[in-house]
Length: 450
Image (cartoon, rainbow, N blue to C red; front, side):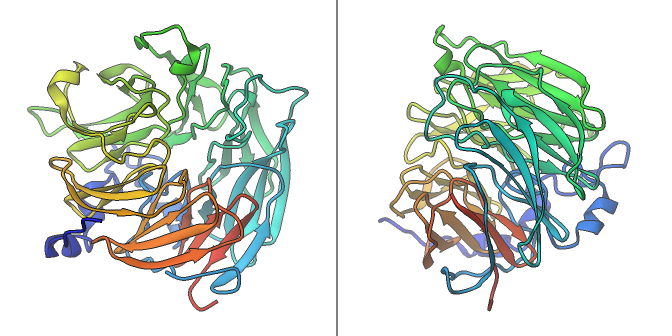
């Protein structure tokens, strides 16, 4: 494979990339939310070095906090602090806060849906709570998916789970007792659900892009009451509901208003055939970009000036969109598109200040220039991938569907390959210097010298 050496600037930029690229420490208008407009500084302090509260981490981009140093080698017998078998079948990713790890799971037939809390230090199950019991499931469920694919989200008080049309609930994170639940927010997921909920201030927001209906909903996180709900207004170009489905997770960004120093938050929400930006406080549409692909399944990235996202299936693309603008900005704000070796399921990574990495479903790892989409290096890993890659320091971690993992340097050099007994559909988390890895059968805590 062609593998040019990245410039020294890339290596140096890793030392301070979090300052320039992401809403890590937001100056929220009311001062209550310091991290991604969802968690307060006090909450962050309580989590200490184990803070991975949602899908793809604190800022939703798969990047570990500066200084995290997870291991590069492991096996079933090496560097495993603990391993806990998880019953059922679920592709949701683990989340971590302080001394607790949480996951969701579901029975293979979807009739039982549960949440589980694990001790961060030992892997012991602290509680296992059945949240929803179903007498039947939706038809035309895809065997590749699970009934527990959306990743939960946690704050300093509660643990929030979504199983799509089967229900959404808040649980007391310490006891597992149900605080509230909703089972009336419905769509026909057809192939199954996959969109993960996120927090914004006092709201719990998630996508419901189904075969029959497509909308975004925001609930009061304390009570479960609907604050706003907005139907997708997208020309899908077909009446085939399978094309209208999507699985992506939204992202909150902060954008400087053109011609001023004022900053506005936006909810970047991918769906089939388009990405839409909404005001997260009320669901008002701000802008949109149209594309040809459908069933987007990844989470967008933002580097402070550009939004990057995978467009979905049917030969998905990676597109770069200039922040700002209003209305339909397809022709004015799309800076570049890349179509070679772009994944449909794994979300991309921002690397340093100048590069973005994508992982193709068939195992091609590619680094591109953010400014142009030009390929800098590319490596073929082999295997099939659904799990999104992780960036920790100057290392990229990729986990395939059969148990093999690859660790690469940010300049495209292979550091290590490792194997576990089963593969990953879930994306990894980082707690301190440990990897929290969920395979098809178990959750692992992988740490150096264990």
